[in-house]
Amino acid sequence: MLRKDAPNARRPKPALLGLVLLGLVGCSGQQTAEVTGKVTVGDKPATSGKITFVHNDGRTAVALIGLDGTYRAEGVPVGTLKVGIEGFRPPSIAAKTNPKVKGIGKMKDPNDPNAPAGPVLDPTTFTSGPTISRRYSDPKGSGLTAEVKDGTQNKIDFPLKAGGL
Image (cartoon, rainbow, N blue to C red):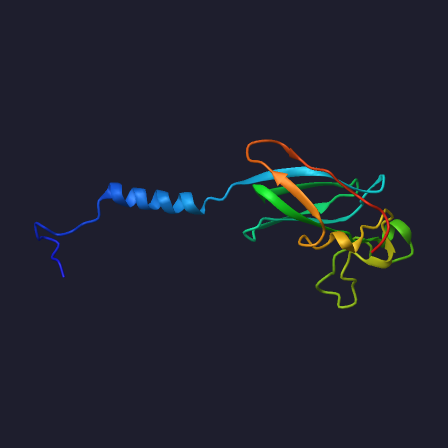
């Protein structure tokens, strides 16, 4: 064991530590970018769902598809990516379709055990729009790819074929 007051005590050099830390940060700093675009099925925008970008090293980024078919994904790995697109039809708020439902938009009153857990959703009422085939849901088997570049505006649309599972 070296004594602190020994003249030949080995102490890390600040410059050497800085280089080691810089090297570690440089190796772990993966490039990412923002990607925007539109998902259509046939000629109609997909009205809901999610899009998943997968890099060959396993990194992923996911974004929701809006009612107009557009998406915006942040933190998407740069490079050639496999893409999966999964559709879902979220239930609409019951107040829009059934005004007789009580408790719409109200949160549960903690002092009332019979109060609705609100907002009340009607699971039988779904948004309308084209259905995204399940064949596009798995990034590994969908056949969809995206080339994402660093430092540029990445606008990537996905025109999907209608029909089929």
